[in-house]
Length: 316
Image 1: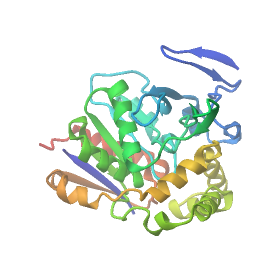
Image 2: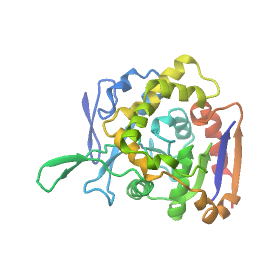
Image 3: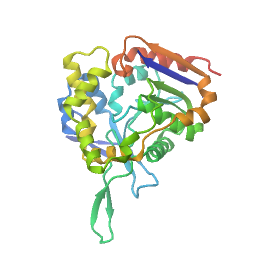
């Protein structure tokens, strides 16, 4: 499996399966209303393309309405599937996805289970026959199965799986468990050697929820943006903060994030050594100079060019 690693230095729209209500500005109604405050034109346009597709998994009785951006059209080439980083969404790809679309690639941007804009409220009937609400698990196994079932239902061909930051760990875990479904891996400023969520697994739930409350706060998200990017203006940092925390405003975000934290998270270093060592030898490294941790936001043209060059190369 060839591997590319990059490192930084109100109407109704009818679809074949579901109906999606949209706002007057064209945003899907399931997005938090705060999407209207985002100024970034690319983020606004990509947000309008987000859909929810039903995905049946073994750990829920009903399908999960799963958020993603579908390709503008299906093409004969191998599909590109873009994941995102920790506690983020497909809006990370607001600048790079259009470039890949324009290059003629069948490009998906998929929200990882527990993050993004999927509908994670599951209505169940309890033993007293009253309806109650719960949320699906957001551990590694659940995220893997959800991605596999989405692939099986809608993509259906070996894919180029692109994972930035923690999304690289998601991609490696998936490829190690479903090697036939992944033709190539693209890892962007990969966070893959951390041993899961560490001591957070031992936190009392009350403390975990307190930490998650801080995680979605505007000051912390703004500060993270100043660290993640090499050069960003104050105005962009503020707007990108609103983009980056938009999914945190959904009602199940705290529960699913805590569930992931206490579950242990990703530890894929052993999978690299045991299952992917041979494949990683057949790899290409691209360096993107003067760039922060999220090059597909900060330098989208360089990322798109690196991916295209990798796909066009001979890695046999």
